[in-house]
Image (tube, rainbow, N blue to C red; front, top):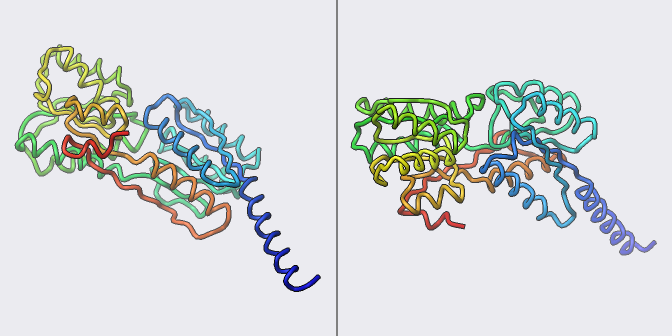
Length: 309
């Protein structure tokens, strides 16, 4: 074979080999639950990212239905199927050790997305792609504190108590409150990320005669639920300030209409892209960042048009 033909043949073989390698990539993805607005955006964005690879990358999604045991079983099934990598949006950030240990023992790259395990000391072969939830809480409360003139009562709607997103967003809120001693927490209860539950909680507080000047919610869904309860009770729009997190389509629309004072945008596309890209780097044994941070952004009436879809 002539040298030129040999080189061309080698180049083609490398091209086809790399294409086949990507085409054969199968990534198992366990989501804590499908029935969640933000996580639906995250899942859809991951799927969109996989489709951008011409050779094709297959994502196999499973719904853990907020069940720790079910999620571990899904990961074990992925390992049995010999997937190339695993992406997990954990149900309970305090109980991820068994997932981590199983993936590491099998030699399969593992990426946690959106929620970081409580234990930040992860072994090689395990990465995280998330946003700093402390910062989300700080951004919410700082804006509200200034709007409140540094005084008044707030209520806090907590997410799922098994998630460190709940813990850290609330911690960020309370960090800011140390600078504002005249702002008091009147109530603090979990709405479990759900609009209906938050609406019921807020309605109960109103019925009980609890006075509050602002609602600080760990996500947009609960913030919208609070806004609905206040409207139903005849409270004038804007009298009670309301802050959410995620910047979902409904959340952005609520800010635009004045039903929410602000939301903090959590970039589902950024987290999705980062998780798939990191998994592929790990599969191909390329250098990767073990902790990828996707920044939050504040949404108010002043900039809401930038976030409309």
